[in-house]
Image 1 (spheres, rainbow, N blue to C red):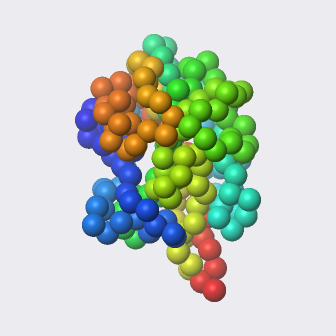
Image 2: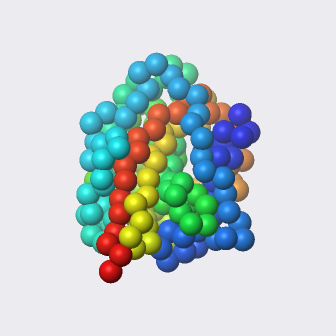
Length: 193
C-alpha cells in the first residue's frame, strides 16, 4: 500500500514546461487496486485521446469536466491526482484534489484555483509542480507528446488536510487508506516552434 501511495502522487519540483526536477526524479506512477465498476464516465478527457487545447497552457488552462461512477462501498472520501509520467525530469503533478464527498460523481469544467473551493462540489486543492494551488494544465516541451493520467482514489477515511497541502503531507495521509483507483489517460503535444 505504501508503494501505491508513493507512486500515485509522486511530485517533482518546479518547471516552466512540465520538465520536473532532475535532482529529484520520481518513478512513473503505477496502477492501483481496481474495483468493479469504479471508472471514469464520459468526460471532457477521453481515454487515449488528445486533450482539447483549452485545458492546456496553450489555451484557457482551465480544468476539464470529469465524471465517474461506481464508487466502492465503504468509501469515505475521494481524491484526484493529475500527473504527466513522461516529463523529462520524472513524473510531474498538475493537480491535487481531495476532500471530495464520496457521493460526488463529477467535477465541473473550470474548478477555481484556491486552497478551499466551496463548490459545488466542495473540495480542497494542493500545490502542484508549477508551485501554485489548483489546476495547471498540460504544457509539455515543444515537439513532445505526453500522457496525462487522471487518477481518482477511493479512500477508506476522509483526509484531515487543509487546502494547499504539500506532496509529503498528501502522501502520508493517503498511504493507509486507498481502497481503489480509477484512471483516465489523455495525451497532449505542442508544436516544436
